Amino acid sequence: MVSTVPANLVRKLQELSDQYDQLGRQLLEPDALADHRRIRDLSVKRAALEPVVSAYREYRLTLQQTEELEAIVTEGADPDLTELAREELPELRSRSQELIERVQRRLVTTEDRAVGSLMLEIRAGVGGDEAGLWAGDLVSMYQRFVATRGWQAELVDSQPGPLGGYKQAILRIGGEGVFSELAFESGTHQVKRVPATETQGRVHTSTATVAVLPEPQDIQIDLDPKDVKEMITTSQGPGGQNVNKVATAVHLIHRPTGVEVRIQDTKSQSQNREIAWRILRARLYEQQKAKADAERADARNSMIGSGNRAEKIRTYRFKDNIVVDHRLKNSFNLGEIMQGRLDPMVAALIEQETARRIESL
Image (cartoon, rainbow, N blue to C red):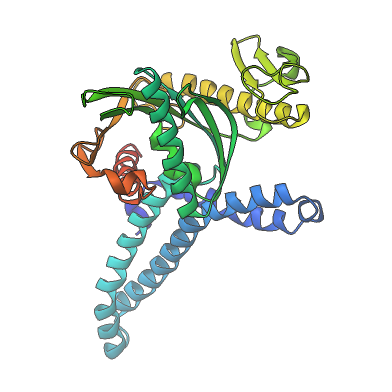
């Protein structure tokens, strides 16, 4: 019943219900229909709200039916009708409780599901050339996972390692639910295995760090273009005959924070500039969100704002063919994980975080 649900939760759910209807109207506006990117953004946001709104509306309907049957029982005017009402009430009350619990589970993940694209940065850590090879393996793992989800992934920047793999790689990934499933990948990924460069069969420990940066809308972050120093330079490193001759690399420096972005992967200066600005916005958003989260001393940093890349979240043990996720305190089949089949681990992480968020409501 309504009285058993906190008033602030009811208000929040009603706001989301109204917002869902408003997004539906916006999708039909001529300006939106003429802009495929706006249509996509509105659709992702509405799709993120749909599960919680539909469950909330079903809950309200069930609650209304419960109140009507309770009124019939109280009046007792028709014995047969009263008896039927008494029989149906337990099931309706149970259904109402089930629905409000489902609403709460979906409510705490709605914000994550509204993020339709992100930047996934992978950097080689300790371990020399082997760390670069490990970073390359992680890139392949995530690309396979993205393919199973039907999302879109683009390698927007990379710095190859001397023996293969990457010193750094940035993937831009887009699709419905992309952030809600990948947010928990931020942190240090440690591998224990015999490197290809090892001649005596000794197991080495190497690391790579992963940062998952939600890609915000321009209006979501405090970014004045006047605060950004932009430089156009020649590309660095190995390449074709035009490398180091044609100025296509874009180097951005955000003066107030010192955040830097350098993109040189494509031969087009305009493409490199667009990618560089996207990454700069994502990094600044992560930084601003982390600052806001840090001010909430009574709550753990959210996954959006964590940025704690030094935290070892997972160890991949090739000898034992297992992956240990230290947050879950559970292990998974390494062969399956490296093939991009992350589903069991992702589901467990989402369940763990959802339970934590529900407790903090």
